[in-house]
Image 1: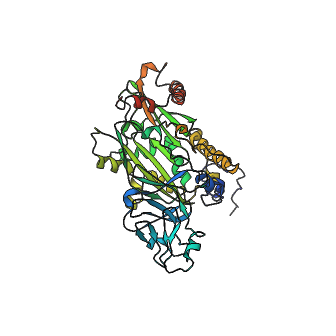
Image 2: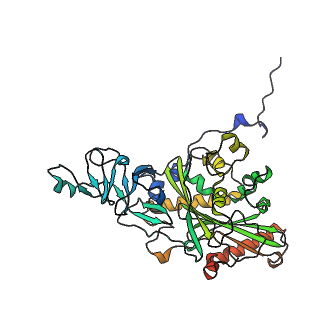
Image 3: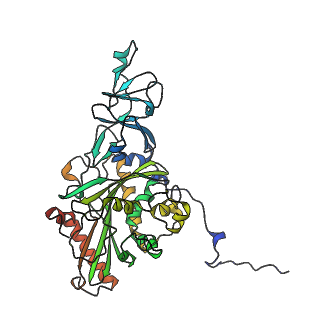
Length: 439
C-alpha cells in the first residue's frame, strides 16, 4: 500500500489537529486577589456583597476579591463587614454571636465593633492594653437600594458611593433582585454587555423554540457603534423597525456596574429616552467565580406584574435549570460559563463586531495601569458632583428623519454615531429627569 501524500498547506476543513488548544489566561487583566494588578484596581470600587434582606440573627459568610468575610447587622442596626477569621485564634466569625454593639467570637468571646475595633475581651487581664493594639480586619459599608456594598481599598482614600443619574429619577423605584453565581471570571460576565451581537442569536433561541423571552424585534440584526464614555464603555445598536429607527444602548460604568434597557422594547413607539430597566453589579468572588446583584427600575404605574418581570429578568442567568433544558434553551450563563473558568483571550479570533470587547478590555487594562501608577481610575469619585452619567437607553424616531435610506447600514451607522455625540453632551437620562414618563 502506498503512503498517504503529505499535505504541506492543510485546508481549513478538519483542522482540529493543527489548532492550538492551550494557552495562559491574561492574569494581568483577570486576577482579583490582594496585591495583584487587577485586584488592586478592583479594590478602588464599592463592591456588592449581600442583600440587606439576607442579614438576620446570624452572620452571613461571603467571599469577595479572594477574601473570606462575614457580613452582619448588630443589635443597634449598624452593618459590618469583617475578615472571617478572628484575629485572636483564627476561629471563623461565621459562628459568632451578634450583639447590640457588634459581633462576638464564639470561641473566646472577643467582641468586635463594625469597624473592627475590639471592645471586649472577657477574662483577659491585659484587655485594656490589647484592645488598643489589636483589631479585626474590617471594611467600610454603604447600603444602597437594599444592597450592602463594601469598599476594600485603602482606608485613607475612600470614594463616595456613586449614585448615578439613573438612580435619581422621580416616579421610579429601585427594587432589589436576587443574587446569582457564575463559575467564571468576572471579565467574561461584564464584557457580555458590550458584545451586543450575541443578542440576535442567543436571545432569539427561545423565540425559535416557542418561548417568550426578548421582544421579537431583537431578531433583526442591527448596525453597531461603540464608544468610551466619561464613566466607562457603551454601545449603540441601530435597527430599522417598521416605519421607525430604534437605537438601543447599554453601558458599563466603572469596573463592576452595567446597565441595560428593557428586553421587552420593540422600537415601535417614538421616544427620546426610555425608563431604566436593570442595573447590574458583578462581584469578583475570586479568579474564577462571580456573584451578580441587581436592581430593577420599576415605574410606579407599571402594568407588568413584578413577579413575572423578575422571572423574565433572570431567565438564563443561573445553572438552576436542568442541564437538558439549559442545552435546549441556553442563556447568558451557559454562554459565559461555557468559555471556561477564565476565558483564554489568546485562543479567540475576534471579528468586526467585537470592537466593544476590545474597547472594554483596553478600558480595564488602562484602569489597572492607572492604579499601579498611584492614580485614581475612571469610575473612582471623591465628590458626588463628579459622578459620570449613564447611557443605557432606547431612542426611537421616525425612519424618514435619519437622513437617508433606513435599510442602508451606512445610514444607520451615521445616525447612531450622531446620537453617540448627542449622548456624550446630553446624556439620555437628562430627558427622563425632565419628564419620567416621556415615552
